[in-house]
Length: 265
Length: 248
Image 1 (cartoon, rainbow over the protein chains, first blue to last red):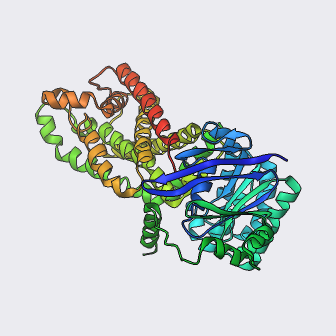
Image 2 (cartoon, helix red, strand yellow):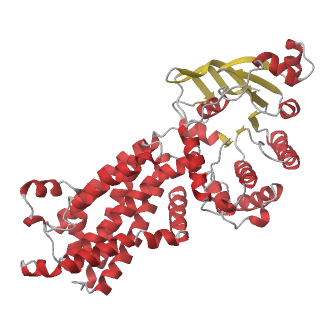
Image 3 (cartoon, rainbow over the protein chains, first blue to last red):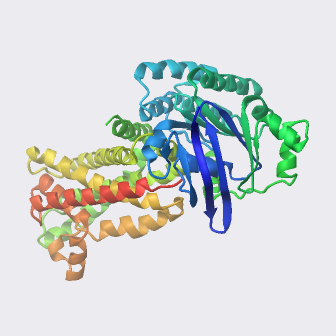
């Protein structure tokens, strides 16, 4: 099968900072591909460029055969995404968030209703479907976010740290659903994660990214072999180093925290 | 079409859900209407201007629309902060449709708010000149809403966070309101003020509204209509262009 994502010497700079530095990789159609990397390594920046919401400084991206820089609309028709940070409308109910998404992605009404029910049951929010999202806890919002992201079945599904902060049961449910999508509908899965065992278990191929560069790529087995380590975690540390990374909070993040504090008062 | 509709509906749903916002945003217009309307009423009448409350009411309705519309345009900054904007930016629909839906929603809400102030003006004693001109009044209210929601959208597309908000209120909304014919008759103004007010689109919205509600106007109502249509198109184009360029 051909490559559904092709990235060639992609770079993104913010001022002096090179968030992503000349990376190249490709993902085969129907593959489950994981992006592993420490905080601030450039994972989310790469996903943002792949999903058309950030313009690269240099390099080219082809997704489903379309040029991300020139054919934004066609590219957007080809993928779905679950973001790392919240992207729900807090003033709408869970159900309204789902149907708005369905309308934006032109999911047929009947399919929308069926899948909404099925997905909200998987993430255990079906009995809260008519509650405003602003009354949800962080974990519930995360679950709704994932359910919404799985509502339409695109060619490529991006999951940016999808299971962060979820309990093992929900994580398990979600990965089963995602793997099912991949097997039955041949949807390509591109995800980032901090959980090594998730990457180890789910991903067919893994790219390890650090300081904006890809430092290792291959199947879990290949990575372990290459670094002569027993576990993926050791392989990861051997490739990316032991140092803890500081991630600078963006303006937006800081304001979001600030606004949250205000609302709680 | 359905994208425009769902984005429109989202605005409307959120509007009717926030009762405190509806009531809260009516405080200032009502205060202006009552305090200025009755406060200046007798002086205005003595100066031979006639009924000031009737002169003022369309100006205050337009003010309400100006504020509501600009703020709903600026809501994009909130959506950016709380993340929902991303959801719409990655959707496989043209951003112009998303912008149009939001803007039409904002304009509709602004008309609702304007209608509430109109009803309050009627209670306060304003007499309508001609009931058949109500649809024309609604048209001018909608056009005014459209213009300033687009202005708000254009500004918000360029701003990263809420810190510029005060700047917009003090350097965009307030000048637009005070440097127009909303509070004072144009032909009594000093020349420099009259020139400024003549370049302010709000003046044409107010004038068209004043014509359709009280039968009095300073420009030709047809000119008002043409100006508002042209300005609305210009700002819709600018707004959707800037909105399309937003990066997350």
